[in-house]
Length: 140
Image (cartoon, one colour):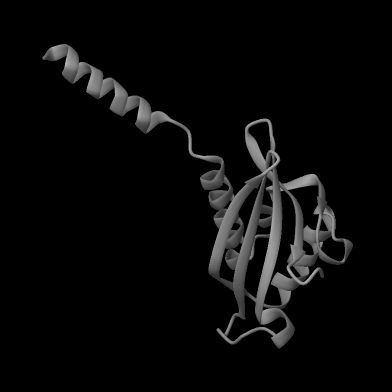
């Protein structure tokens, strides 16, 4: 009886200590970025970007940070996630998110930027998932 109880306890501890799934890790990294954007923290928002990151309009890691800093000087940004789907493909994780972006007053940002779908490509580097690409679903 003691061995059975000890086995169940050990199995429970091992299950509790197992690392998060890759999908959960990417979702957590994305949520940290979303929180940083809403806090106006460009450094934290760009922290998970890979050194080889490529974004819309040719943005790289450094120019993404500068872009966010300029945006945050003008206004606070709110981010509402409508959909967050993560799938695995060839050792990478692909994330598709539908977002509603709002300004400090709660009003929608200009129509072309208010509701957007983005595709994100994540790659594992050492033990950390890094964002290597961000693009608008319409190809922009």
